Image (cartoon, rainbow, N blue to C red; front, top):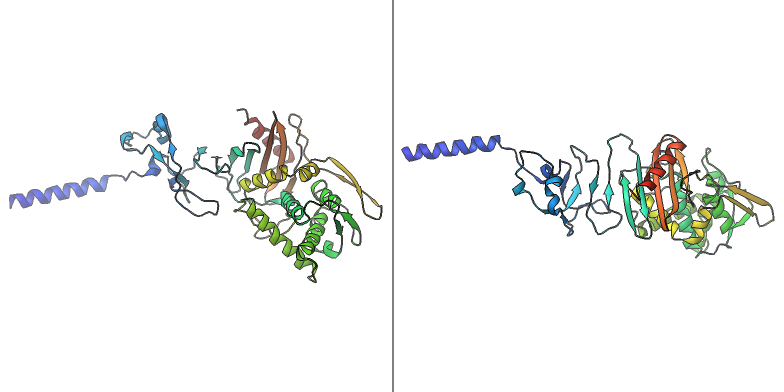
Length: 363
């Protein structure tokens, strides 16, 4: 009987002790908000065989919570952002074999800003803010329109682009390069209207002609041809690893379902930077061309003026939902750099945040 009572006391004591204990998980070591595993580019979760070896910095990496037994902490872990973290770290180093998964910095705004800087030659993102937060691509969509069409025409800049009633499909608020139905221009001139002037009319005419060429001729109406081209744009995006992006139109104007991330915009910008003919057009400040009937055309670029760092090209834009955005191409100390910022309230903020990104290259 005495032995039974002793055993019962031990069980009750153990139960009381366990009830008062707090379970220690990997999240506790990293301030909450991270769990074991790896978030793939397709937003799934899969094992990652690359370990983060904190070496002598395990104390700092785990934090200084006095309730945590440092001797029990793992010395090598793989990390994945949790779906609903209680706390968000200011900056986290993510171990990965993908150069596009590097430094992520989050903020907690309902409509967070997003940005990143990418060294093309080293294939490395050196800094990112909300790299994987969903946003709209805006006018930077035109970079993908240009890449897709360039592939369809095999880089033949002298190919002819017939301008037709696809212009009737444009949104009433569309920015126009000045193309007219019934006219013909070369692919180069149409791309200049797209990348220099930022014309949505150029985007739609390029889309229709590229779709017809890809199909080897077609009886589809203009709206159906634009839709077919947009499907090609999304296929091109997949080949670039832009798995978080969906495009609905060729000009980037606001549309339900159209979305991207800063990380994907850096991928796109890098691809254009590595296509010399497109990079040249995207950096042209003033372009003089003509319709094939001899009527002259002149396009002006809206690239922001940055005194300390002169952008060599790419696109700027604005939408009511995302604010001002800018994808920039720079040559800094012999390195080809692309940057992306969005969520800016003013054009000046777009410039200052780009300068800040470039400053992080030497920080």
